Length: 434
Image 1 (cartoon, rainbow, N blue to C red):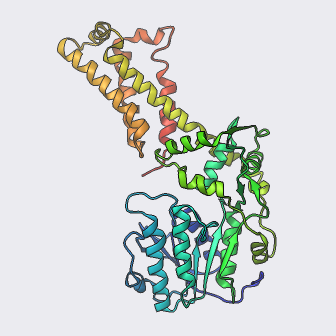
Image 2 (spheres, helix red, strand yellow):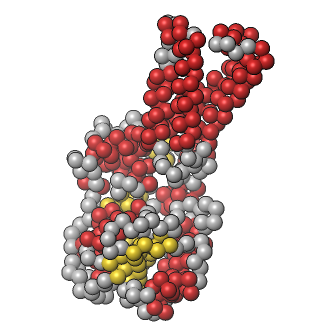
Image 3 (cartoon, one colour):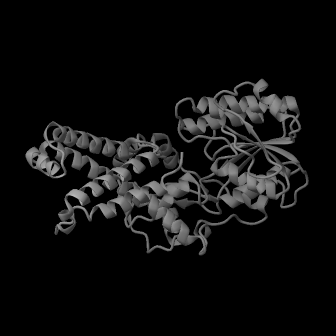
């Protein structure tokens, strides 16, 4: 196995999945090492750095070697970092993990590409039980059967500030009482993103790299120990745990799998229960040192920002639920739980009377219910929050003009609009932009 010294130099590298969490980090590392990059992404933007080339690829459609062959002109090496944890629409494991990579690898043979690295996953082997692992394994085996200098890279859980799994585990670690699946004894061996990038560079440039390498941290941990290490790194108090019986965990996962953006489903739970550990000696030899341990993942300088991010990820969903309930309950009350005559009397004091008053009452109630449901169900909510802010400001202006006494009411019905406006603005500003 190669040591720290690089003996083979590649110049032009095609990197698929370059806009993803791992792909973007690999692009930075490759660029810093002096490689010329061809960044293959589904939705190309102007190249982020001078000298980079950005090309469009689609792993749901580019399923034949002929689709890839023109893109490999002048390419010395290929790194495939495309992967999906869950299937969605036309993004299936079969197309994204199996058919498109096979076509790419076959085209690499035709183009005589000097080195191909496949970013697979630890656990993608003949005994895999999840669709994610089985599909990765199928592409891995195809690559290794070809007359190519190829390496299958199998990282464990990757820790990086912008990684989806890191955000999920950090948010869990920030809880005052951390729920554990069972007793939290599942085996994990997280590896730092910097170590993964450094190892990939060594494998790319080595004269005779191994065909398959597990990238893991220096020691295996229980899930409980990993969450405790993350909590300590975030600068929070000692972890307190709540073991949850596995039948309840499976039921919660089944519900959570239906929520937008959730990483939890039966497959991910199955992968966690199987364990995610391997011998750290190969990555240590690649790096010329042991990989970073979990208790050193979060440096003192990075802890405040990561702690804030974890706490926001933890409490923003509760804030969103609270805002949704305000709209839903207000709508239900307006429909008739609160006396309709009293509601119409209030509207009359603003100059809205008769049939127009009845229409305004039920139209407002319908809008409130729609806002509440959309807050819970919509995937992209920035426009929704903007509409909510405008409606609340309009209500507040109308009441201020026609019913100014409500500002002096001891229950503060209008003053309470101020924290609600602040809450919705916070949700708007932390919402991912489309």
